[in-house]
Length: 282
Picture 1: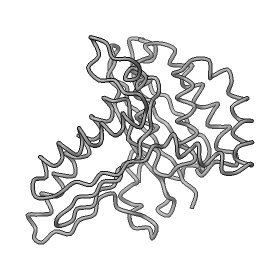
Picture 2 (picture 1 turned 60 degrees about the vertical axis):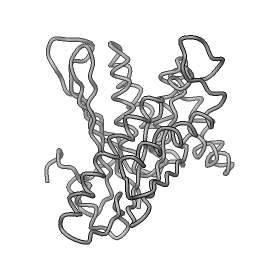
Picture 3 (picture 1 turned 180 degrees about the vertical axis):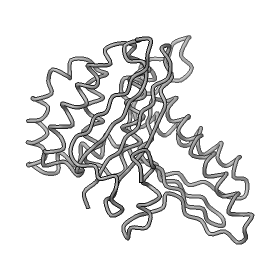
């Protein structure tokens, strides 16, 4: 098995592995129909949540005879959702007083309404969970974790001067404390390369330095992280590849639970390919 192989399909044979989509087909034709619906729904959710400044962390779909249940966990990007808050003006069609009001609008007035039209014979039940709030509850629940979190923030204070990098550090905290976080980390890195035309070296330095501290901390639930980014760094004429490997990421082992995701960032200097492997603790 090469390093570019997606290890997700091999981990499905493990006892604690879970399928992200569950359905029971009555005949062979329904299997392809469920697969098509699953792909379309996931692409639609990613695009809609992204438009409102929300990054999907994980999405589980269960198809029943009368209802379709979706469980979505997401990360709220404060730098992007802040434009929807405040007083309404002429150039702003939507505005919300709080984060809860924004999420309710996305769930009830956008996603559920359109998915009911797409799945005509099935009622849609959408449940969402905000990772920002869940991470805060987990940190404040234990005094040890709270103290460790404050100590780590002091070490990263030079990276917290700008809102963009402060949010990236928050994503790294969530990635090492939540399962199946490769998608969230890859999407976040991809979005930062779209915004940052230069200073790519500083972003790589931030990722390496912060992950080295986080993986060895008490709040970590991962053994290692591997990130491969390829593209034209800092706008140079020729593309290059950067590899960051922190901790242990055994891609050749079938028993190790590894979460993988790849994403593409489209910039004025060309595309950047981002691949993330996260080796989780059992």
